[in-house]
Image (cartoon, rainbow, N blue to C red; front, side, top):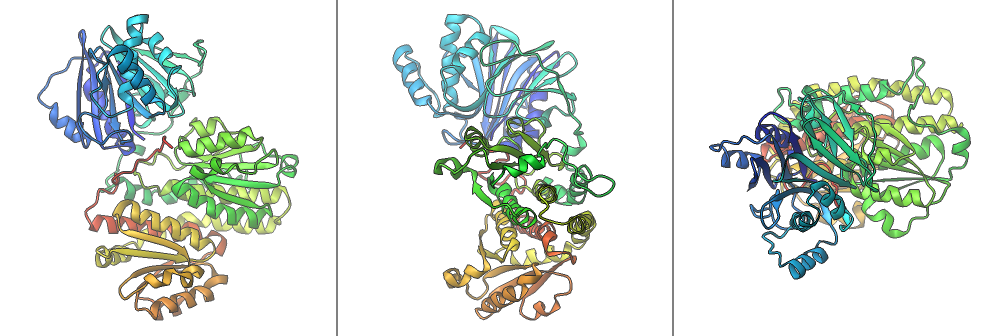
Length: 611
């Protein structure tokens, strides 16, 4: 959550930082601000709301600073107001700070600063504590770098912050603990940012800053120091995402663009993991037959959309490998003292690779002896770096807060991983594996077919967008698809949406079904189709508006449904990849008809780096 951009070089910093913040607005958009080193003083400008509000407020001002920091916020401590917006400054205005994450002991530090130094705080945030603490330390150390290091030893929590000082005109110092930070190498300039998207138009070489490290940026140098204050030598990483990857490309919203990029993303993820003979090849994963013999169970842990991918993964891994699988919500996992040991394979799933709940669960499992494998989209992210094995998706940058192509590529990774293990332990035959792989290879064209016929879903949304609530039901893997479809709708349209396993309807939920209630019934598992048919009959008897999602050829379901959405015919095992696409489109069109801010839904951020 929240986005940081820092620039130091020889060009005016304001426009570069503002441009970078726009690229990070998906991480937070409650407020935005900028701190610029103008001659011998720091100028801070910040405004509640979107970055456009900040731009408007400073439109008439001229700035000459070539060093500065900026921030776009997702509120944690203190309401989204001008006063609580970042950057925050110390009492005499000589130091400015931007910050992601949470300082868990901020009240203790605040009380100490108030009592011992008579500091007067202007905001409700934990971030101001950092600025005031640095101000006190700077008077002792006369050096921003030393002050930042000393402050890091006094703070507890998960955080990243960047600071500037009016006495050090071309220098930015930042510290990373559990939330992401990147340093970028430019030509006569250098950058700091929460992720790579603000940097793509300026450079293609970055440093991934590790946990517990401090980084010092000047126009001509980037220095990294470890948690013991020792210099770190590290090779920069080449970034192969393009500026075009992170732009809308003519689509009205990033979400629609990313839905339409799914055929390519699925094809890329498959293509990089299948050899010419169609066998699964998992570079970056060194799991051997002997390793697998020691694995007695698998834990899949994730949050939100990634958790729903994990639910599909459970079905696939158990079916293809015969190994028992548990799926846990990451925010709950480590607080239940999970039964994990050296015979556990722990699979962390995270689009950003920076999801703090997932990262902390990973550390818990690793401390108990588990082997850790991660499925992530961002190369070099925290989850990836702390894993024994990494399975990268190839979704490309995903900007919209509501995840779409990252989810479908996570599913593809689950298929490939399950097939790989299933062949490794001989639970499935080569013939069966090749049949599934053949079906997977057909998915990009089948997804494209769904996208090409999206007008029917758009028409449904025009009729239903004002309905107060929508129910999603399904059985087997379709129940997991229902959860994800429901989440997409509530995330961006704010319609009260509820998903449930269809067999549970009669155990309470059916009491909520009444005339004109919208129910989306997902029935793509052929062996469960008769059961779903009966569930739909129960709902029809209560005069609900039923949209049934089925494979082509199940024409009889139209007799008991108000509307039918068809996906191309396929094996039951791969239907979840196809079934989610119409539900993503339905959520998108419903939100668009309601006039919502689709890419930046309220109260949500893309990368959740707080617990």
